[in-house]
Length: 241
Length: 124
Image (cartoon, rainbow over all chains, first blue to last red; front, side, top):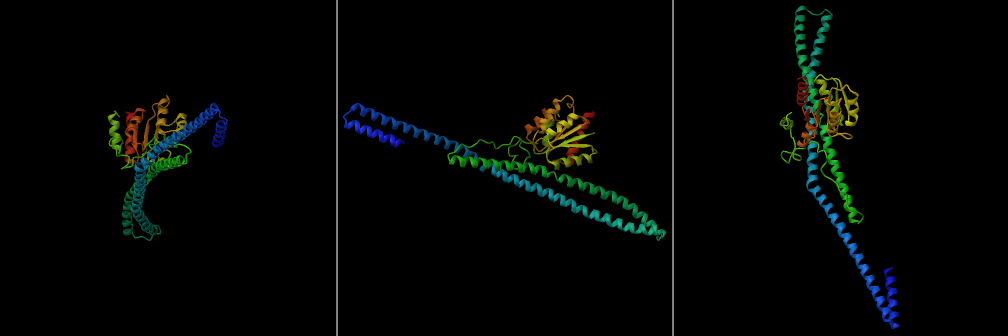
């Protein structure tokens, strides 16, 4: 297109010169110069735009740098915390179960032993001396059972509490998923910029609700977060609670 | 004594319910966020609210604000049990009128202590 115009103008210029028409030749020359300028401006415009896109690309790149430098190591520590918490919960549960199994076995053995005796007593096959011993045994059994059942109940409560890891780890994992999604978005943004299609979308790394405090990650800034219930209680009492 | 337990994680609701039963409060109802909790509260009959903070739909802090803004619920005791541990958040909850604040992970003893403290204050 631009070539056609230039060719036409060149032919006009040649014919004007051949005819000795100076004025016409000047007009054609002006036109050629004007065309040249327009093309130059267009090219400058294109370069400016490219520069702008590259600059936005750079700022997106910076976000990715921040993610690689801070958020990804953070995510690793968060996931490590998930492993620690789930391990602790499993450990605690297993320990309680291992402690309670012998308690339950002992109760079972005693009940079997006593019910065998009780059966002989009902069948009137038990001498009086043995009956007196059995009575004492039954009394002991009642005392022992009360203690054992208390142990079982305490253990069950411990197992119950150990399950609270699911809530905490769930929240931590959700946060890491958000990070991965952010990373994906900015990678897509970068690829689009490289393809010259669009500029990257903005995103924020810090969630609105920070959630569980992961030791070594969220407690780096001293005084910002409560790391224990005592911290919470102190803060609240300083507010007059 | 009827207690409403609000948390988006069902495991946590079950844990809190079981702990409450252990403390002698067996009459509990559950909701999974502020949006579902509010109609239950507005219907009346709830004496105590235990709520998480970070929940989809309606957060615990918004639920607390809604409760304090409702003349019928203004005096309802509210215990927040949450993983949110930023000091500014705790202050925000206190300013919104929370009666107790427990951070997760918590122990059975902590929950018991905070609940008893709240009741002491109400009775006293």
